[in-house]
Amino acid sequence: MQQPVRHICFTFLLSAVLALGSFGQTLPFGINMCGGEFGEKEFPGTYGVTYQYPSNADIDYFYKKGFRLIDLPFKWERVQPKLGGELDAFQLKEIKRVVAFCESRGIKVILGMHNFGRYRMNGRDLLIGSPYVTRADYNDVWTKLAKEFKGFKNLYGFDIMNEPHHMGAYSWVETAQQVIKAIRSVDTRTTIIVPGENFSNPDTWVKYNDGLRNLKDPSNNLIFDAHCYFDRDYTGKYLLPYELNQVDEYVGVRRVKPFVDWLQKNNLKGMVGEFGVPGNDPRWLKALDVFMRYISDLG
Image (cartoon, rainbow, N blue to C red; front, top):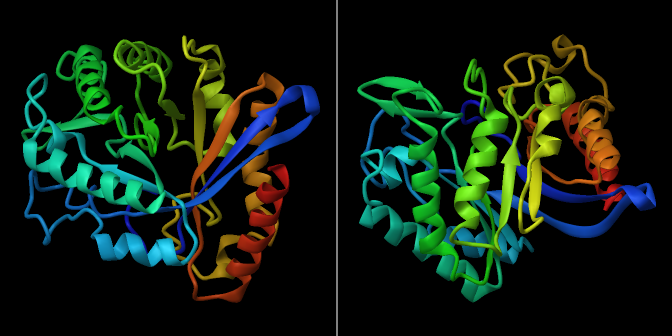
């Protein structure tokens, strides 16, 4: 999702097993606990005003609702204010607080960098791979993060970049391959979650991301991440009334199916890291029900 909106937002993990022709391993639903990635126009921002990580009470609320997986977003510029520099002590303390509290509740955590393939410097969003934000810079921050968090037993995965898009000459496939290698130099256990170009859109996955099937992980522990929204422009903003979106209750299934087919064809694991609808029209909720039944049946 490109901007925060009020809607139901979940994570669903699924595992493709080509030999069976179906999805064999059942994995959990989760919840995106947004806040740490907010206030992206102001760095570092004011904690508790422009951005905030979830409180223990927030986590307990979803724990009581039955969730055992959370996706915890953060901004690169906050955890590492200077490229190549040390990680910020306050950010580490707060993120570790969340992960440790989740561990005490038996909740698994995904750590997700929400930077869209960029790093903001002097008011400009600079592409990873460019001379200003090199792949070595990107590898550096993830190597340091992996060292800090690999000891947590409830760490589900590192989501290496939320919704990269318009990467131009700086191939996302090459960037992803390099950072996988960097993370594995310090952590051979934790799952690495790989998003797709073009905002991780499942409907255009093959067009923009077919090359991701060639990624090499010495630990053979990658999960590919797509985001699926149902509105006409795919953004998840839901700015138009239902009828003006020209969709029906099967819109989510149609949009996610190219991604599912790609996983099955290539015997790869995948997740739907974001999907959601507004609560202002029961027809959206119907589309969500159809979508959730479809992906649940895959598990």
